[in-house]
Amino acid sequence: MLSQIVFSGIYMGCIYGLVGMGFALIFNSSKIFNFAQGEFLMLGAMLYVTFTTSLNLPFGIALILCIVSMGLIGVCLEVLGINPLRRRNAETIRIVMVTLAFGIISKNLAEAIWGKYPLKAKEILKVPHVQIAGHLFRAQGVIIIAVTAILLMILWYFFERTMYGKAYRASAFNVTMAYLSGINVRAMVMTSFVLSGILGGVAGVLVGPLAFVSSDMGAMLGVKGFCAAVIGGMGNPFGAVIGGLLIGLSENMVGGFISTRLMQGLSFMFLILVLLIRPQGLLGVSE
Image 1 (cartoon, rainbow, N blue to C red):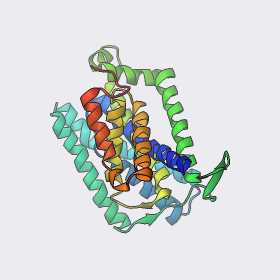
Image 2: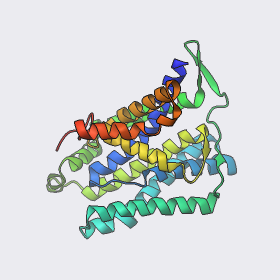
Image 3: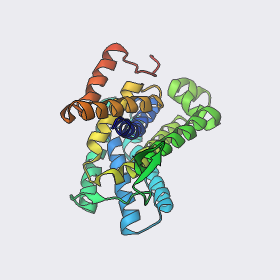
Image 4: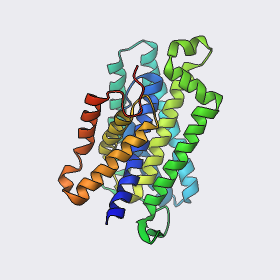
C-alpha cells in the first residue's frame, strides 16, 4: 500500500516537474510566465493520440513527431505573440496576457479538431505492470520516472557542457552583459520556447495513457506545474522537479491516508508557505 502511494506520487510529481521546467525555462530567458504551458501538455497528448490511434504509427515515430510538432508550436508562440510585443517594449502583463490567450485558443482549437469527448491514449508498453523488488508497479509510471531522469541528464549536459547552453545561462543571468558579449539573446528566448514546448509535449505523451485525454486536461496540470516551478525556484529549472515531487508525494500521501478532498489544495498551500518563507524557492537564487 505505502509503496504504491509513494510510487504514484513520484511519477505524478515528475509530470508536474516537467511542466514546471517549461515555466522556469521561459521565465529565465524572458522574465515572463507562460500560462499556456498546460496547453502544451494537452496538445502533446492530443497529437500522441492522433499519431498512435488514428494514424497507427509506432511509438518511436509518434514520439518524434510530437517533439517536432510541439517545438514548432513553441516557435509560433514566440514569433507571432511574444517577440512583436518585446520589440515594442510592451509591459510584462500584456505579454503574459498573450500566453493566456494562446492557451484559450489552443483549448478551443483542440475541441474543434478532436471534439469535447475524452479520448483514450495507447499504453507505451503492452504489459500493464512490472515487478520490481517483489512489488507490482504500473508500467507507465516506471516509464515516466525513467524518461524524466533521462531528460534531466540531457538538459544538465546541455546547460553545463555545451557552449550554447552556457550562452543561454549567461543570457538568463544578465541580458545586458550577454548582448555585450555577442550572445544572440533573441535566439536564447526562442530556444526556451522550443524546449518548453518539447517538455510540455513529452509530459502530454507520458500522462496521456494514465487517464483520458481531453481539451481541458492541461488546466490543472498547468497550475500544478506552475506551483512546482515557484516552489523549486524559478531561477533554477531543475528545482521544478523537486517542487513537483514534493507536491506529488504529499498529494498521494494525504489522499491515501487522510482524504482525497484535501489533495487538490496542497500545491497551493505549499506555494503560499514557500512565498512567505523563501520567496526565491527551494533551489532558486535571490536577485
